[in-house]
Length: 435
Figure 1 (cartoon, one colour):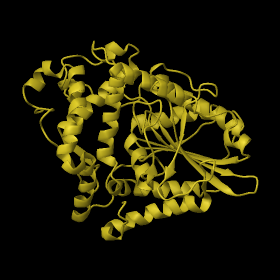
Figure 2 (tube, one colour; figure 1 turned 45 degrees about the vertical axis):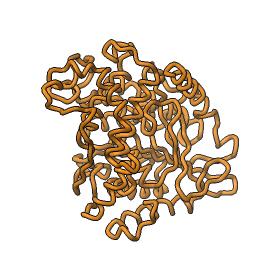
Figure 3 (cartoon, helix red, strand yellow; figure 1 turned 90 degrees about the horizontal axis):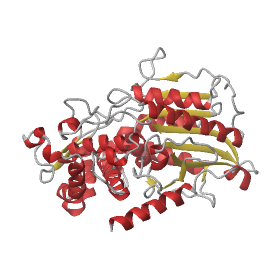
Figure 4 (spheres, rainbow, N blue to C red; figure 1 turned 180 degrees about the vertical axis):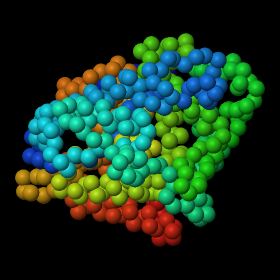
């Protein structure tokens, strides 16, 4: 069965690659003109928190690979990959006519903003260098001379007792009728796979009982205003180990070495990747939670999208930022093809394009743009001939035309609905049942 699943996964990756950026895309085939691009990006490859005393280091007898960066910072491979991403966009935007290649943008035409984390600021700078190699692009960040506000901080901007109760219900529903017990049941096999891969049973610290029993202990969820929501218990420790394991798989060319000598199938790695998405959905996927954590960001995105002077915007934060934004807006999506992280892969870009048709009508395209798992592992350069994936998105209750585009009126009504739903958090009975 594992061999069959591995073959299916490989076919999905191959077929998914063919559905990337086609040459000319909408602008040539349907005569749309690209006028603006706004991107919310996850940072590129970082080093995990696997130093001495961290959970991943405690829960394995093995040594993790020697990372090219200190804990949580962008690795050398991540920097090169992000510069390649920027160069792809340089070629693509020139092809679409938004910028001439090697242009130096006029004042106000572009904006780059990143969270004040090394991995986020560095990702933005590498992308900017690839996109505008002859320009000195300024990257705004909280703490700079402008007094930039951290509108991408993934913390709860509204919290009440009623909110906590309702949001916890939504999180627990991931486990079905059994709630958090169901979550423990659903994740037991993948936690066992993670434990076996890092030989956790041979870790002296694990054997000491410091982390309990990851296969039988329960898991939970905690929320507090002004702080990031978080999972607790056995699933959190497993998630932290899986994070380091997946990052090691991306960085280390030898898959057996990445798995500490174990021969994992593609489906095994995909299972670990899905577990990462599952945990991320627990932390930031419930719509009530997403509405609360992303409110300032949704406001800032709307402001950028309505900025007539702006041609290109790049915001850089985290996987939880991208996922929270998607869920706050009410996205409809399945698993992303070609990626073992099924919703927010490494360096994924939530991209909004403003397009104008031949009759002068404005349309918007929302999509996720990301490298495949194989492109990441093989350090492939992204080019027009070897593009990243592009997955066009749709949203609950929002109509699209035959090309998957949203009318200008419906697009901004989507943002207005999301902002109004945040205001309704003070009176949850005012929210539709789907919230």
